[in-house]
Length: 420
Length: 91
Image (cartoon, rainbow over all chains, first blue to last red; front, side, top):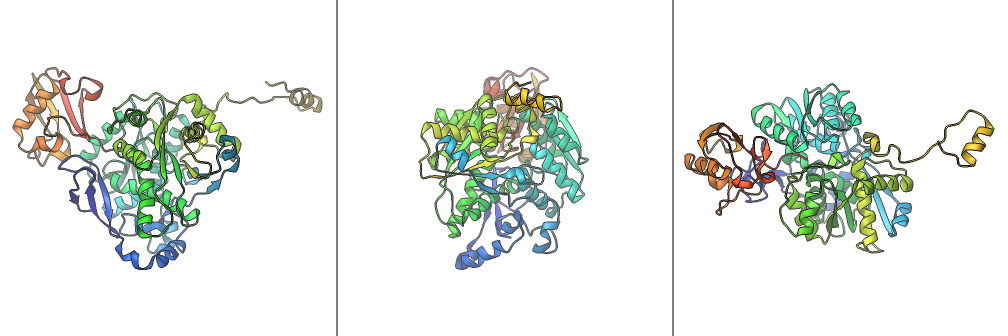
């Protein structure tokens, strides 16, 4: 594989490509390092190889930390497990017009098998877990990951354990349990669930916690979002990306994806300005950004954006560094703005997103109103999940008519505007 | 003031395989000092030269992150439990 080793982001100690996520020297996070030098001589051939690959993330297998894609051959990869990716990138002129911008694109990752970007990271983590000999999948989840792990485990025929906060949205609980997983509702918030799973992962050999002991591999899956965006924009980077921040992993890996391809000369442009989006009720990274701090002070989440409700974000320091380095920012929007963001995206694009997408869309609107975005900028917003998973956020936010099945009733109620 | 300390797998190479141990101390800082005294090489892995915990180390007292309490000055009662865990999980 192109991956060469695991490397500590803090002290640069290297390790073999093992099921390991923490540096034993300094407790820093480990990240996969690659050697892509064999591609440098013929970037055209690499581009053609990608274009000839399957219509899912396995087309980017050369940039993922796997011995190989699942299946006996690349062509069969589409039929193993639940392949993710190759989601639409839609030009959103009506959204751009509403917020006063020139060019906005929506990367709609609700189009994945379980309707969120988590299918990407789980596809990579579960494949690596199988390569390393694990027999059980597990995760600590705010909901979307729960869906993705339960479904992927079902597709692969592996047992799974999914740990969630007990107060999660009903839609996300139902859309997890249906796959036949061992669903564990933990009385506490996500950070409590995460602490339990961190402890458990050290005690259960054979269990691959996708976002704990598999985390370096898992996180690499998020790079496929930027590979796709670049490919869909004609092998070029956008000027700016607005993406949500929970742990900060997605946010930082999107930039890593662009950086890898820019370094190879596979795409044109430069690293986009990176704007992070959080909910006010759980905004440790946005608060640290405002304060000029380089570490995040943990918070107790209280927001309708439960999929972003991580009070102690593991990649917070790197998200801060990235936003500053690229001239971006990290902003927070309140629950009313989140609901308005969901509505704005739905009304202008036909895309119904969950609360995290409301956070992202509302942040786009906020940046536009503040004058942070130039009129000639090409902006991509990353919509990470489906509105059907957080229906409570839109309940009672619109009016409807209820009438008898008679013409006069329709005329009296609807055409004269008498709402129920 | 005997306190139980739970040690994560990543530190067990430095503790001779011990997954937990009992030390004396009335604050988290004292408990950690006692722990450093017992196991050579442990301090450098989780704390900087100034004694402050590294940024990717989480310490919990009774299940609560000490950053929500009084940090290293957080009181620990006799028979209490201190848990050390890596912070880089999740998300």
